[in-house]
Length: 139
Image 1: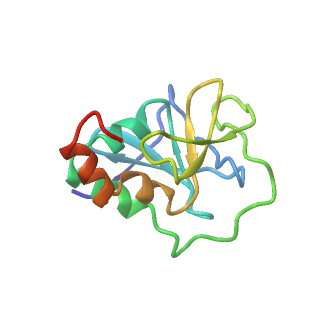
Image 2: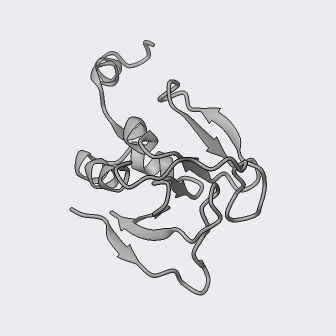
């Protein structure tokens, strides 16, 4: 399974990168739309899409990680990131699932911006995740 580029729709136009204000390219990964910046490699996910990717099957997570590469990423912008949907300043956040990964979230629409490499860290199932699944209810 590979991410498939898709065209923005009239009812859901292309979004601009929260860091560079340039149009992001949209891809479909197992029914989940992922917007990726060709300049910095950052990824924008609308509300619920990050959770859907994190909880998806191994093939879907692997396909999403194909988009999350930093080999063509340019240096990060100095400008403070804003939500590409509503212009709200993004705030740093960590999730309970992967507390070591910091991403930027919109408090208004619930969207999430991930710098290059952060989606892979969020969707990678490591040894600690495997142990947590074996022992539900324990942290």
